[in-house]
Image 1: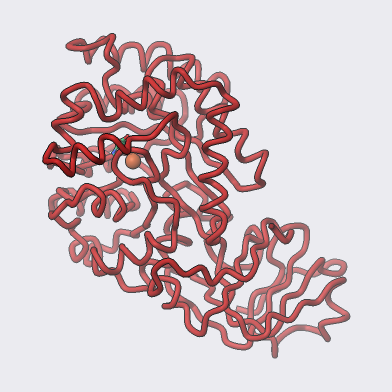
Image 2: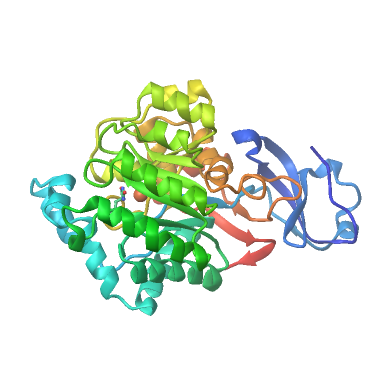
Length: 412
Ligand code: DI6
Ligand code: FE
């Protein structure tokens, strides 16, 4: 455990800390621990008593954390952070009785955000999304996934992905981008879903891949969006371009999405409220991570729970994310997502925190470099004013963050 990287002095040594290392998806708690950082990576994470030398001789700078807890930086592995406008009016309509699906079928929903996103300048999109990203960073997020999918034409999809990349440069947060061109059918393709999938596969995906704007490819596989056959066409094209896939699966109905994701060795399948036991088994066999999105479940007042016990029994890694988007989850707090995962889905606080760290990293294909406090991984850390790690999922609306280090550098 106390393996360490040597070779010159460390840049920083954090002492008098309790560590939730999250190794193997467990707290992996180390009380009276220390973290050494060199070149933006973790050089030591273990008991202070096993440090190989006196702190002052190990690092140029030593900082006591006065008994605070340190966790890996939080990872929000499923967001639609870049979009134009908002959908407060639709929220009012739903409170007057319309359903999410009714609104989508009547040309509102995702398509109304598409209009606003097409009309917005890159600067405006970046400003609005940066404000949301700052709220995520406020409660400890250091890595975020951002999907396109509100452009539904080549230039606007590219505009969204460029904005997502820019957000990473502006904030220092690691941004992983996902191309979600097959999110909804744009109005100009009404009744011609297969022709739209031709456009996604023949024009959008190659353009996005050539510009290196996407780290993964996602599809909304649902009766109000795209069929399993259409999804498979997009995934075949992604595979040909060497891009990993993820899937919005079984959110509103069971369309066999989880099994389809597994068949394509997807990094993750997400939502999963209607996933069958068979789908869970397929995910376990393929190593596909289950990403649970309790914010959308809450905001749409869903009642059907994802198959948590089956996921646990099959050993499928479970991640938790905000799904931050204007229609089904206008949520910009990972800590609140953790609370909802426990309260609504009955995850334990330990499972929820693993879902925002180790397992979220895996859902993004970053398992080797992010998500746990282990030697060699990115020094993305958060120190919290808490007495036990369960407090992170327990408190609602509290923000006990004391400090964040991104790649070893203290972040604002
Ligand atoms: N499922 C969701 O919950 C979001 N997208 C998706 O495929 C909702 C997006 C929206 O309503 O704007
Ligand atoms: Fe989503």
